[in-house]
Length: 260
Image 1 (cartoon, rainbow, N blue to C red):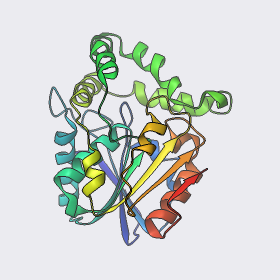
Image 2 (cartoon, rainbow, N blue to C red; image 1 turned 90 degrees about the vertical axis):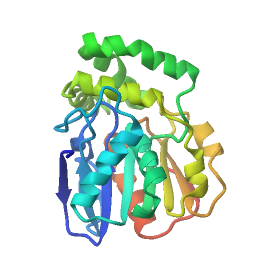
Image 3 (cartoon, helix red, strand yellow; image 1 turned 90 degrees about the horizontal axis):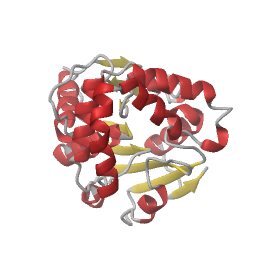
Image 4 (cartoon, rainbow, N blue to C red; image 1 turned 180 degrees about the vertical axis):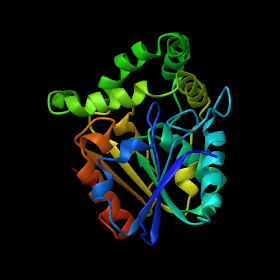
């Protein structure tokens, strides 16, 4: 079973899934700002943190099944599921497989679009580097995921992100990269899921085409989106604001589209 941590005794369960080359520690900055009405379940996805690699190609569907095993083990039937980046892809796969298990789905600096041809080619080319020169791969990529306009302010956060990436099993990262290439378009999930859907996106996100994603959201009353003045890592760049949106939106209600 996947490694996980439980925190709090709130009446609502919020399950947190990290992204590629991350682990459950990424929520440390945001956690103090999250409402005590949440019980938190923070999970290390396969091949990340203290969770073992489960396959040579870790598809999003396969990882979603492992997440479901954790929830079943803890007798958690209706949860709020939030995923950052790759964790968002896993969350979409979870929503497709187990829609009745969700109270809400939050795409946290993530997207429902699959990789386009250029992105797939980049990922495939990265396989060898991830396997043979992982430290170089992490050092080259991680800094680009932060708001370029706040490099000085975010220097410490960037170092934390890099340390987290370097602690990842390179073969776990490789298996996940192969799984991400296989992703399909998941817009139909947003079109059909009855649970509340929340989107947090970054104005300066180099990993997600924020504008295109927001413009193509289905026009449904259960979907709300928020664009923040940050890059790909809102949990490190704007933890208090991200938590405030999550608290208010998942526990209360806000207008449909806001920009922070």
